[in-house]
Image (tube, rainbow, N blue to C red; front, side, top):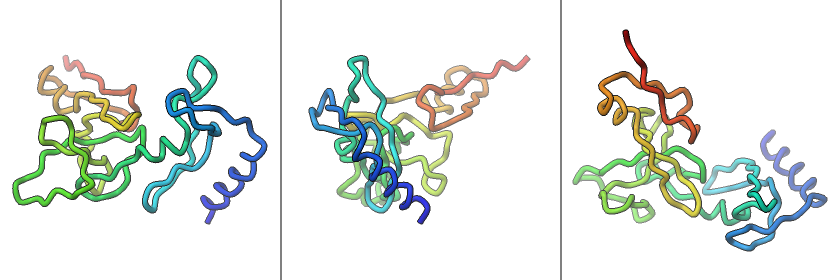
Length: 164
């Protein structure tokens, strides 16, 4: 209920706010508003590019959301993702998004669906995976432990720990 009131209040205030045009999609948009997919939603504030406009409108950002290949829950722009290859007995859903030619599918990083150490990238515009090394890949490559403080932060891929 509290979330719905916040959305209604934000929608009312948006009537008076400045409108922008997305640099890529060319649609009119506000800088902040609700993004929804399936039964989930959240308020998002669009970052401005150098020319003073956002890259995409809020509606286009919402349409870039996909569903997790494993649990079916929504994956929004900016969310961390996993890249798992299904076992032969798994029936891949129609909506599953493949990752390149790797036979892997894009999944979410919810605690009920994946392991945090399997974060392999982020879902970014225009609807693709920005690949980062998983903490396990980093540890195997360096032979040292890796710490990631915030798996949802695109700028925090992890830190190799030096043990003396």
